[in-house]
Amino acid sequence: MPLYRTQAIALRSMKLSENDKLVTFLTEAHGKVKCVAKAARRLKSRFGASLEPMSHVSLIYFGKEHQELYRLNQCDIIQSFQEIKENPDSFYTAVYILDLAGHLIAEGHPEPGIFHLLVKSLQEACKAGNMETLCRLFELRVMAHAGYAPRLQKCIVCRKEPQSLWVGFSYNQHGIVCEPCFDKEPMETRIKSGTVNYLKKFLSLDLNHFDRLKVPKEMEAEIESITHRLVLARLGRELKSYPFIRQMAEMART
Image (cartoon, rainbow, N blue to C red; front, side, top):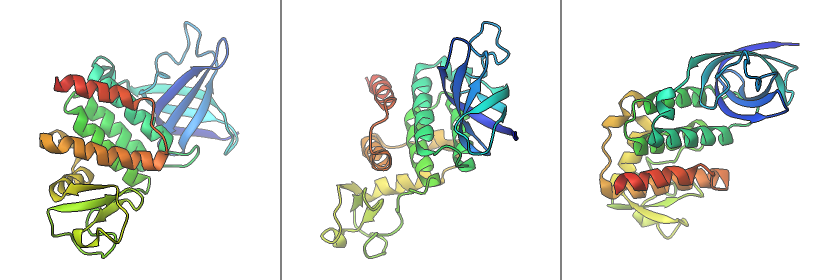
């Protein structure tokens, strides 16, 4: 049977039997895969902590191509992201972005762009910077990698750059609507053109410098509404991990 070698992020780990675990990985080369880790639940398991969710690992597994479950052969930690796990704000944000990445990728469908975005985002979360900004940036970037980038440069109706203070936004069409076209395209909300400019920065900013982006307080809720509604429009439901990061954000504001 073929042997696969790739870097991966452990997304989920669950009990499979008295001794074994079922681990879902987001791999660099093969997308999302599920592996059976034999004897992983034993006290002296050779896998150690490498199967813990969030671990960045070097992975070797085997099995027939396109099968549902693979057999884990070797798993070595590259980065454990322990700093994240010790900081509640960073931890809940990291859990959410893992959850989001896992739900956007189909099993066996390679998405190296999303894999590298996830690794880099976790590395930045270790610095315990502005988790709100990192979360919004990840939502927009992961949607773009998945083929659902919002169209922010020109009106989706007339294809012209908006000139007014306010623009509409259509979640159905994933783009902005200029004021003269408000009556031509159903839109769910109106936002300021300045907010659109920040959304553009979120899509283009070097992740190494994400903490330099200072979003005005009055725009934070508006930006969150846009990015999160885009996620909901794609997934069709709320992720269970999302309320936790909202709770942490509210606590930070009080």
